[in-house]
Amino acid sequence: MIDLRTVSISGLKWDKDLLWVAAPEEHLVVTYNPATSKTDQKLTYIHEVWDVCPDEMGLWIMTGGGKLGRQIVFWSVEERKELRRFSCPDGAGAGLALCAGKIWMPHRYNRKLYCLDPESGKVSWIIRTENETFSPSAYRSELWLVEADPGPLGHWSEAKQGKYFFSRFDPARERVIERLPVSAVPRCMTFDGERFWYAEQGGKGFTSMKKK
Image 1 (cartoon, helix red, strand yellow):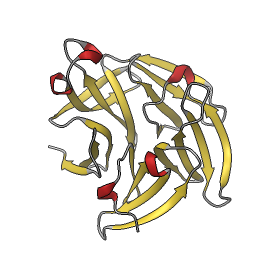
Image 2: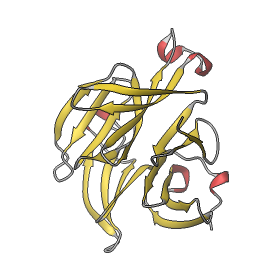
Image 3: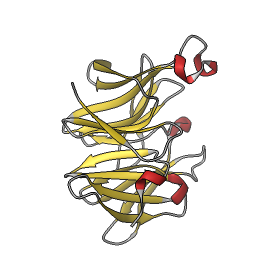
C-alpha cells in the first residue's frame, strides 16, 4: 500500500466517493477513499503521469512523451492497454478535465483554455483567460480551475507575491463566475461538491478545505 503522504502529487480528481491521484515520479495512478483511508494502485505507466481523469470506459491520463512534452492517453482499465493517444496542442499541459463530453485543458502561461474532442483530439474551441489557469476539475456540470495571478513581475515574481484562487469557470460566457482565494500555493486541485482537495507546490501528499 502506497503512503500518499510521502509522494509528490501533480493531479487530483474526485469521482464516486474516491479521490484519484496522479504521482508523476512514481508513474502511478492511485485511488484514495477518505472514508476508510484505503489506497488502491490503479495504473503504472511507462512515462510520468501528470494528471488523471476517470471516465466510464477507462482513464484519461496526461503523460510525458508528446511532441511538445505532454500527451493525452485514454487507457482501458478492462483491456489494460491504450486505446487513444494524442499530443497536447501548442504545448498545453496544465491538467485535464472532462466536462459536458469534452476535454478541457489549460495552457497556463499563454492564458488559454482548450476544449478538445475526446474522440479525435482536435481542438474545438480556444478561450482566452484573464489570469493563468491550471488543474481543471469538473463537478457535475461545473468546471473548476486553479487561477493564478503570479504578481507584479510575472514569472519572475516570488511565489509569496502571487495570488491563487479556486475558481468556477463558465465556458459559455468565457469568464470566471466564482472566485475563492487560497492562502497556499496549490499544485493541483479537485472539488467534491463540499470540499476542495489540493496538493501544495513543493510539498508531499494532499490536504483539503471546506468550501465556505
